[in-house]
Length: 264
Image (cartoon, rainbow, N blue to C red; front, side, top):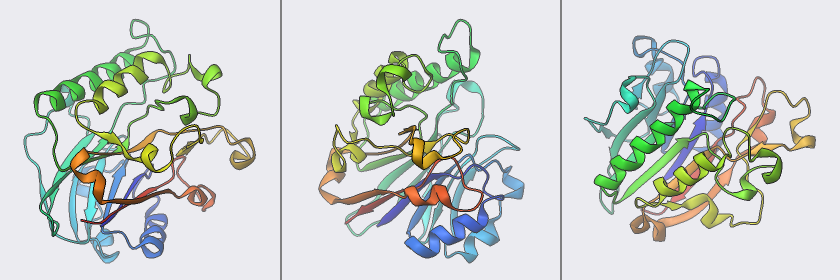
C-alpha cells in the first residue's frame, strides 16, 4: 500500500498539482489537510477522475479541512470527537481493508497556534495545546492498534526537525509546551515512522515558509508533517520519502508530500 499525506493548502486551487502527484506516484490513498472547501463543493468527480473514487472528507469555507482519497473502498469511522467543541474540520478517520486485515487511518490537521507561544496571551496557542491534550487523552483511553496517523500536526518535535533548535525554541511549532505534548501523544501507542527511516541527527523537513524567496538555498525548514504507525504495523514498513522537489512546482503549497510504503 502506498499512502501520501500532504497539506495541499487549497484543494481546488491545487488540483493540477494533485493530478501530477497522483500520476507520478500512483498512490493507493492520499490524505490531505487544509483542503479549504466546504463539503457541498468538494470536487468529488475531479478527484475520482484521478483514479481515487472513494472519499472521506470534512471541510469548511476558506479554512482547515481534511480528506482521505482512496483507490479502493474505505469505510468512514463515525463518532470521532469534536475536538475542543469547535467543529472546525481537523480530523477524519477511515477503515482500510488490506490482505492482512483492516487498518485504521487517522488524518489530522492540528491548529497552527498563532505567533505568541503563551496561552494566556494567545487564544490560538491555547487552542493548539488543548487540542493536543484532548487527542492524547482520547488515544490513551482507547489504545490504538493496527493504526496509521498522518497529517500536518504543526509541531516539529525533535532538535533536527528544525533548521536551528536554539533559535526556534521560542517559536511556535518547536516550543517545549508543544514538543513535550507531542511526545506524550506518540507515547499513547505510536512510533514516529519517519524517524525510523531517517534517524537523527539527520535533518528532516516537510515545510518551508513562503517568506523565503530562495527556500532551497536558505533551507530554513521544519518537519511539521508526520507519519505514525502502531508497533504492530512497523514490520510492514518499507519506505518513507519526503518529496522535496514538489516545493518547486508551479504555485506550490508551503508543505511537501510525504510518501509511505507498506507491505500489508
